[in-house]
Length: 215
View 1 (tube, rainbow, N blue to C red):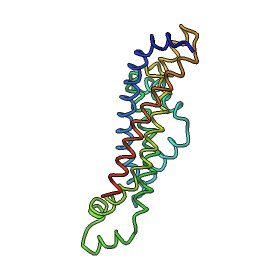
View 2 (view 1 turned 90 degrees about the vertical axis):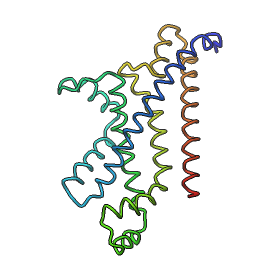
View 3 (view 1 turned 180 degrees about the horizontal axis):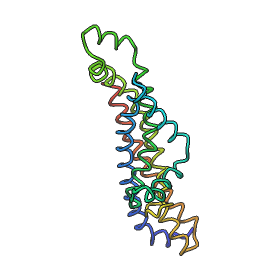
View 4 (view 1 turned 45 degrees about the vertical axis):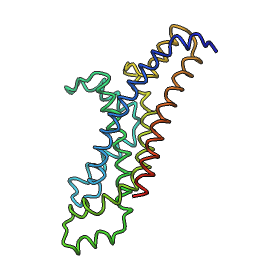
C-alpha cells in the first residue's frame, strides 16, 4: 500500500466527504418530508389520494435508483427540468428514499393499537386530531430505528451520484485512480470516509432511539 500517496490525496477525499454529507443530509430531510406525506396518504380512505401514493411507492421501490437519477438528470431537460448535479442528486435520492421511508412510517402508524383511535373518538376528537395528538406521537417511537436504517442506506447509496459527475467520494476515488493507477489505495481511502460518516450517523440514530424509548 502506498502510504505516501494516501497522505498526499486524503485532503481531497475529506472535501469530497463534506459533499457526500451535505447531499445525504438534504436528501434525508427531503425523503422524510415526502415519506411522512406518502405514509399518511397511503392510509387515506380517499382513492384519489391513496392510489397515486401507492403508485409512487411501487414505482420508486420497484425500479433502480440509478435509472431514476438518469431520468431526472439526463431526461429532465426534455420536459423542461434543468438541474445541476447537486440538485439532481438531492432530489433523486430524496424522492427514492422517501418511498421506502413512507412504508416505515405507515407500518409504525398501523402498529399503534386501534383502541387508541377509538378512545380518541370517544373523547370527541376528529380523525385529524386523533392522528396528530394520539397516533403519531406513539408511532414516532416505532419509526426511529427503521428510518435510521433507511437513512444509512441512502448515505451508502449516495455513491450513484458520481455517475452524473458530482464530485463526492466515489467520483473523487475514480478521478485519482485514472491518474495514479492505484485503485486499492483510492477505494480504501473512500471506504474509510464512508465508514466514518456511517458510524457517526449510526451513533446519532442509536442515541435518539434510546432517548425516545426512555420517554
